[in-house]
Length: 455
Ligand code: PLP
Image (tube, rainbow, N blue to C red; front, side):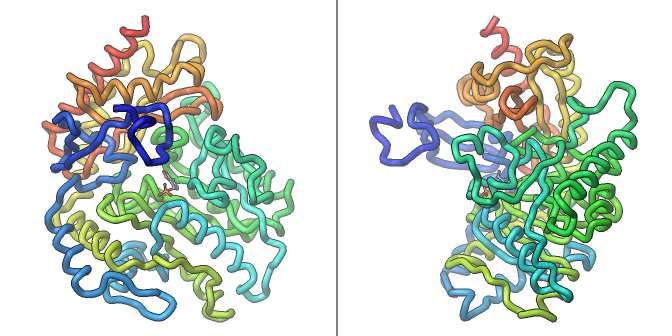
């Protein structure tokens, strides 16, 4: 079957014959030729309660029967109110309102516009604050605004110059490649905080509206957690310069990293604005969101009271019903505990089985969000493979074939934005110790066989 010859879909690649999925059951997806694929990445770290959950199906159908669509310009719904209440309630009183959209990119667009408008609403207004400072090797979405703050070189390069000409970037927080030998965590954090501070001064702090970061970097680096102290240090630099601190938890949030919000892993590091996606609805409906803090909302309440933003499908009741049920399941089944427990086991087994492999440079992550970085030569400063070798996508493609039948999520650009490869393992939150063992041993076999076939 050739996607080019038979498909009317404008696929991401016109050269790949994408296998056709015909079903999904629990942690497996089923392909047309009956291959059962262990969904060890939940797609792009989305399917957090697996596939085919009947509770979510029933919630969707019940909502469809009540009201399938309404415009949030005129109405609100119980289901959207309840979901936003639940999201706001999960933030220990830090966030005041939630805004529901359809994708992580849209959530980031809303977050950036809310930040810009905040400086017009606050008293006194600061209209000069239009700039964003973001980080290298970051990914915040594919729409032109969100891509403008992203530091993902390969996803940007064909679209330069970006629409937002007011973004500058500071270094990523990536100890595997960037921390100096013998540098302590606190010295590394101080170096990065100083760089951010200098960047505020370089561009003029009074022009900066927000610093934007992913607490645990997903697609652009492969599950790189922040170094202890980093988030608080960055929050402090933003406070020093009166700018907002925006955290993008589209990929790492909603329990994926072991806490409901990744920022909960560090004291006094809560954001002013936060985005959510993926595991909000677990893939049962397209849904994402943005949370706005008391500080931000109070400026709007005293100001115009109007956020100049809106989309036809925002707060979609059916998507909200799916997300509300997914979140109920996570809570009622105590799945965050399982994410922590199984995450510990997964990390230990991946490290046991793969650390010694000559092409495995680093294994890092948090909760059920793990990345494996592949290198061409460990002895030469973890020299990356060139992007042209397609290592990560090659491993992911081989994974779908027999006997492995496992889905892992590939990424590239890890070393310098272009070269360097990783895969992400982000299975459903309800996996068992036996599933962890299957994932770890299958990934080990896959990695060994892939590199053996290249030598
Ligand atoms: N932000 C982060 C951290 C992401 O990982 C992604 C997608 O992978 C996005 C934003 C964009 O989300 P979406 O693809 O749902 O638009």
